[in-house]
Length: 207
Image (spheres, rainbow, N blue to C red):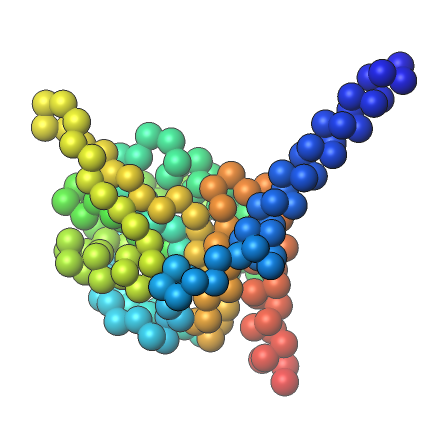
């Protein structure tokens, strides 16, 4: 019995250490602060895309409310549906306040991800999630502002996939970049980050 308890304690300590390292690298003193690595504030960006309802959107669409932004594509086999499912879970946990959180999925595969394709795809997840697409140069412009990366990877028979940044970008209501939520980051870490960004909005509104 003592041996089982000791193994469990070691396992718990290992999990805590892994989570601590993730925090240190993203939000803590170990976060990458090198110029050009962090997203620009939304107020410094210029881009124009189209949402899943055919409406024009840009930085002004996001500024005024806190925002979650994720880059991906509808043909993505794993990372994108997993992350959008995670985001849906975060929004469910936040509850009605999630209506005050812009949540956007931006394609890095505009050749296949039309407005109609994005509308269908985001309908499988939380209703707060929007899907944005545009022309290739428009996608390149917004990715550059976010410091997100993506590349086309050719396969067989003319097929291809996309490699892309897998983290979720979090901004406060002023458009200031707050942090990145890592792929598969535990909900107990992700949701408090979002709540803090939303709390800052509430405090400003009350002051």
